[in-house]
Length: 337
Ligand SMILES: *Cc1c(COP(=O)(O)O)cnc(C)c1O
Image 1 (cartoon, protein in one colour):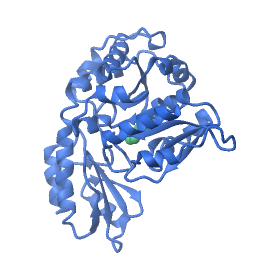
Image 2 (spheres, helix red, strand yellow):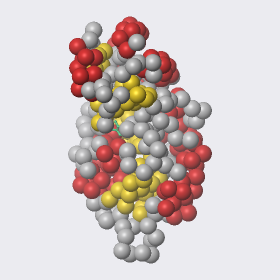
Image 3 (cartoon, protein in one colour):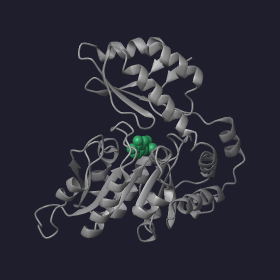
Image 4 (cartoon, rainbow, N blue to C red):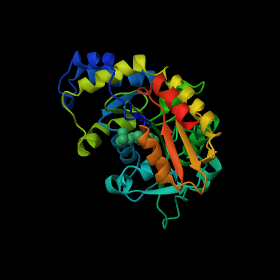
């Protein structure tokens, strides 16, 4: 038995999901003739109370398209120093959109409205890049699955309005934040101009992300997706997996969160471990004591069939997911005790 907790992207489609995929109605989505993709896009736009949605092969491409829709070359996006758009999208902000990132030194991937305000370059000071966008991530990935305080997100909306800035949410794991909080998708739809959500993380699909947004921005999204190479044909097979996941795999995320908390309880008592970051959703980040060798620690786990990853500076990450069974959970707890 291999217990793979490197990421929630390692899941394989369930039997039910595979059945939904095999029986999907498909067509050429470049002509907008794939009924399953159209259904998925309409469903997500409705769910968030937003005008339009567009299916993308990956979350990175959905985010990159959003950056392009909000900015012109030479401009600047404000984001946290841990942001996925800055750290893990291959430098796409500069490659695709010719923009720079103004990094905020936040806490667990999140920042305050005051910090964001201080990061806006005065528009008449032509020496600096023109600030055009605020981008946030919920939950935060490198921040350890932390959830934003919704009141702070509202204040940032006001700041964006006051300064004529766009407001984008990288919601790769927004489903986890929704399950862990009292907010609904519509609350988020009211706040943001664009939102990307992943189907391939906690929801367990083999691929796919969706960019949801306001009409004025989204009308150019299909062209940007084409330019980025993301126009796909009979991709309804993947959209059908997404529709299945929206019906069956959202509420169950609470189970991933519960298991993550239980792992945390065992980790804090483990003598090799210095510190476990607060666990809010399905990501656990913990730090080894300075005399413990990270490679050795990972190798020892690996020999027992447990895979987790290093995040640098003696920090390790565990992510719970759909394919992490109760049986695996008991074995892991036993091993870490
Ligand atoms: C996974 C992830 C993405 C998208 O990644 P892809 O691998 O391109 O689908 C975007 N943002 C965050 C925060 C993520 O964790």
